[in-house]
Length: 113
Image (cartoon, rainbow, N blue to C red; front, side):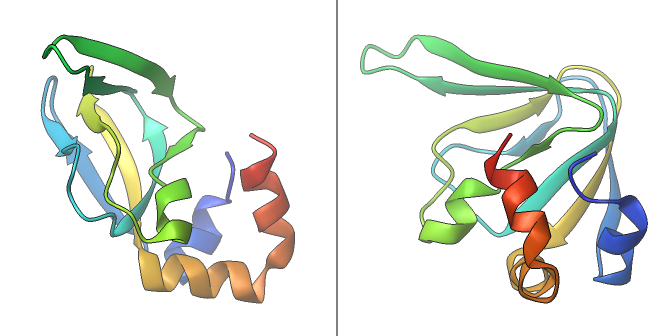
C-alpha cells in the first residue's frame, strides 16, 4: 500500500464499501478525498469530445487514486467506478494534506507511483 492503513485511520480515514458498478466519484466533481483500495478493483474513465468512454486505468488493492488533483485544487478529470466489490479507505483532503505535512516522506512514495 502507498500509505499504511493504520496511519490513514489515525488521521481520520473512513472505511467505505462499494458494490459492482457503483460510482465512487464522477468526472467534474470537486476533488475532496484521497482514496486507497484495500480490496477490489476500480476503473477510472472519462469521455472524449464525441462522447465515447475511455478507460484511463484499472487499479486494485494497494493502489491509491484521486490524489493528484488534491494538490492543484481542480475537479476530478475522470470518473471512478467499482468493477468489483470494493473496500476503500477514504481520507478528506484537509486530513490528507495534514498527514503529508507530518510525514513528508510519504509524499515521495505518492509521486513515485
